[in-house]
Image (cartoon, rainbow, N blue to C red; front, side):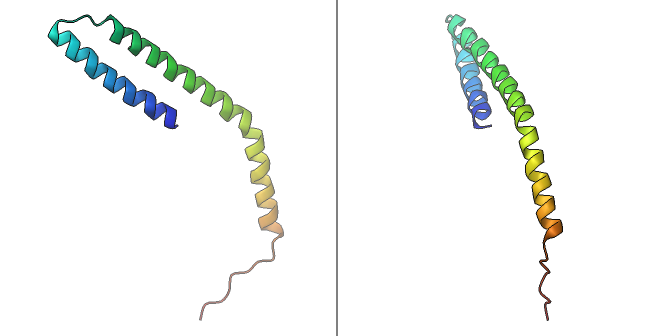
Amino acid sequence: MFLHVAVGILFMVNFTWLYSNYKLGNAIGLQISISIILILTWILLYIAGSMGKKKGKPGMRELYDFMNEIVENSKFQAPNSK
């Protein structure tokens, strides 16, 4: 998640740089290239996150079932408050 925020901040900084150069009449090819790279990086991070979520789902389900089993078998009772 942190990487998504970092890419977003870099994109905003790059866009500011691009706009400044555009208004000053300077070349903006470098800034356009950086924008494309940042967009592709964000897409790759999204795909990697989706794959990780899919891969981790069975393990999370196993942990959830284990937790439910422990809670159901527990003889813990809340203390009476007086």
